Length: 161
Image 1 (cartoon, rainbow, N blue to C red):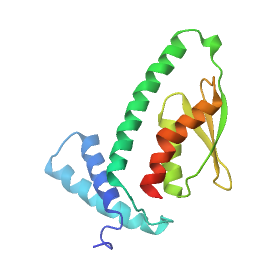
Image 2 (image 1 turned 90 degrees about the vertical axis):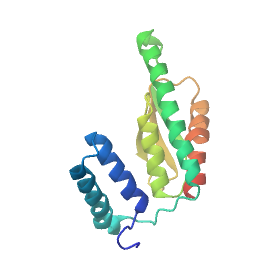
Image 3 (image 1 turned 90 degrees about the horizontal axis):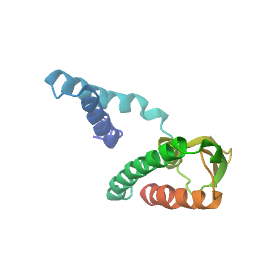
């Protein structure tokens, strides 16, 4: 079964995303989405450096809800910062030391940070021990780093390591 579905969770996710993007459950889209969900992971299986193992799937579900909540909160904060006094903005770069070792977990962390308004992941160090982030407004760099590590890195570490 693993040879047909090398990444079963990815297959399910691709199929659901296909149906959501097309906003229909018509038979043609269900079948085409299923074919894509089978063949995309199958053709790309050789490119995956590591076997994806989710240690705590329910924590992953919780993580998704935390990310959605943080995106909503960050939208409000960025809107307030932009609409009030823009001269008080203090943009800058932060270097977040990483405890994650899995390339997939590091990639998810970087993408999560970029999805959250007001922050963008810019670069991963060569040794993969730190992530360079640009923030729209930095009052306390250590507080931002601590928040990123607690909200995003710690759960990813528990999910994938």
